[in-house]
Image (cartoon, rainbow, N blue to C red):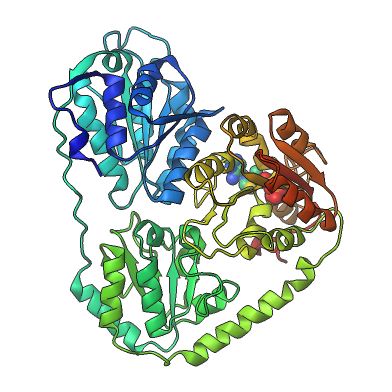
Length: 549
Ligand SMILES: Cc1ncc(C[n+]2csc(CCOP(=O)(O)OP(=O)(O)O)c2C)c(N)n1
Ligand SMILES: [Mg+2]
């Protein structure tokens, strides 16, 4: 939130300093960026105001790092992208933040207003092409407009659904001076869900025999984890989580399930769907039985119409809605004990069935064996980031999360190359915690150069690579569909660990299961950003539906 005290009414500053002063007022401590002349005055302002400049090797990383910062702090992340190609390079990350509801503020350089239309270097109007990706896209029309526009960008980014905002600043306006106006940012008041909808949802839950909760990313953004747990525990409702909601109920809680998901969702008579759209991840609503009653809770109305009829829709401040629902549902506890027991049986059976893969001793490794080794080394609050194909799908199945904000995947936009930016931001935000990046050999190609960034800034994350020499998530489905594959091979056994060493990090290659833990231990204690390059078996086919005969 903007702090009024920091505003020096009547004092005059250059445009870049005005930007930096608003960043500071909104609690921003880091600006992710890659240099360009259009940004110099913003840098000068940040230097004066004590906002740390974290410079990376590609603008996509600057913007992904801003998103990563938002994901691990639940505060807006900020990046500055230079005019023209700097902004176009950041567009995938803006689309990613849009899909994930991640609040980020993207500051753009811009060719000078005075010469607009005369063909200045990198002169292009960013606003029309970033507008579909953002909640707000605007150009500062004068130096004095800057503070209010930056405030607006923060307010808009945070307001539910959160997302990216974009403001660009003509070169001449950031160099010119203007007075700093009094800040007039009204605190956003949170909306409450309709009480009729809550009553209806409560009545359905009170009657439910096989209730489930399916919660996703907006639960996390809405800080609903404690209220969710209270609701689930009081009414004894099994919980399934995806996206950023992972860890909002700890993986070892008796009401948390993952392997029993399809049984739980299909078998439910009442499903409370919280903070997650019924998109492809929920089979467009078909993950639930046709006659199941669906109750939807979210911070605000959905962006798309629900793909099936829902019985109650509760849009408003999430923690409050969850508490109201707990009261409205009365005391149905114990009604679903046999339901819980059935799901627990499936969960336990499935976990047991994974044992052979977890103990598989082949070299190169089965990814499940690698995760069994790694899982044993992770702290409860370790932040685990996934960037890759099948390698990350396996991790999503078996790596457990115990606290909110500990599992970062690219989300439904599914962009490769998010990992190093997310990891950079996560470790800067939480230097005391383990930050582990799970990266495919294909994914490494997008932003592997960021190990230089990590080394230069002394950000000691540990990356664990599943190096199978292929784009497995594409190769196997293509072979299943066509009987052959193209554009699916990478070079086998490439020494990405040596690339990381050359960039100033620690690197090691591992071929056999027994060498994994010692290598990861050395990586953690190396005092450098590290990559453990683990050779994995390219013939392992991830059991997704499209691969199954
Ligand atoms: C920017 C981008 N380009 C292409 C894809 C399509 N894609 C999804 S997963 C994948 C394969 C990733 O390979 P790798 O990182 O080696 O992981 P593996 O599947 O081999 O475990 C590809 C190409 C994508 N998701 N994002
Ligand atoms: Mg691969």
